[in-house]
Image (cartoon, rainbow, N blue to C red):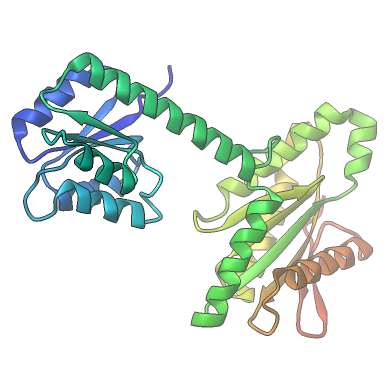
Length: 304
């Protein structure tokens, strides 16, 4: 059974919250807030709400201001907001919609209307989320795709330039992948890629970007300096060798490079990592090559 979607109900009158919650009981996970500040905090708490039912007339921060703040925050901007209020003038509804609300329910509450409106907008959000996921993720492995990688990398490179932070790029290429497909079939090859992707995802940090950029090539963006990225790459290589995805002995060639502000175009660093992978291939595969300023360093490889 699919996990219930979360609806956040916001009203400063406790009775109103209870009435709304009763309307949706059993259909959604319900969270509540009694004022604008609590709403903003709850809206950022994971799992993020699939929809917010927001009262307009509240002390300190009214619903309109809360909606404006929600829509200005990248974390909460995509959460649909339905205003729930006794204010039923056309200009009130227009103001709410102009602020980014998706719908407007007037009091007194009619349970059937609430359920219908909430159901419609939750389903629309699920559909949008699915389309967005498909646009940014690789269909076979579920990892991020090249498009997302490039967008994220440009943002992180800008951060490196502004704040002198660290960014390392790790490229991973499956050794002899054509041979795997030829000898064991493409279904087996797909299983190798899927299990490798799962291993990479499970053994990287939440803030890392792990992407499949095509064929048997993967890239990881790590917010760390070269030494740490190299250590983590060596660890990944050993894990891959020990894993035996799809029951096969598989190895990879890895290239590691630390990006800096000298070259703000990510394609330069991606090419450097690719060159390091090529050197790893030429040196026997199943190893990590670190790209320095002028040289590349071969690291000891695990034995198969």
